[in-house]
Amino acid sequence: MKKLLIIVAVLAVTLASCGKKEKKADVKATKPAVEKKAPAADASATPEKKAFDAVVAKLDPANKCVVCHQVDVKTIGPAYKEVAKVYKEKGGNIVQFLKGNAKPIVDPALYDQMKPNIEVVKNLPGEDLAALAAYIRSLEE
Image (cartoon, rainbow, N blue to C red):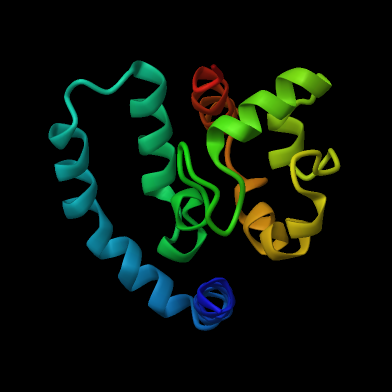
């Protein structure tokens, strides 16, 4: 039941974020103050984690990866460590998946839920996509 509520909440936020562009501009206008504080809070983070956080900070709150993914625990989506493990085992390309050019290999049944976020993420610059993939791969055990 909790998962259903979380899924409904995420979908509602995602759908709401697709509405007026004026609201997105307001959210982006308030983000920089928050972004500047986040990196200082975790000075011990790896370079991959810092690059990942910088990319995620650019995303609309509803499209942030951490809404559905955690490092060690499967929440709405698979844990990052599981993603890293499966992509290594199957020789998958995380960047190609994030660009929308590869099929999901970790949990294909969840792809329809993630599709709206892929539509946003695939438009990020290549170096940002590479940073996301590098961080995920760095978590492989």
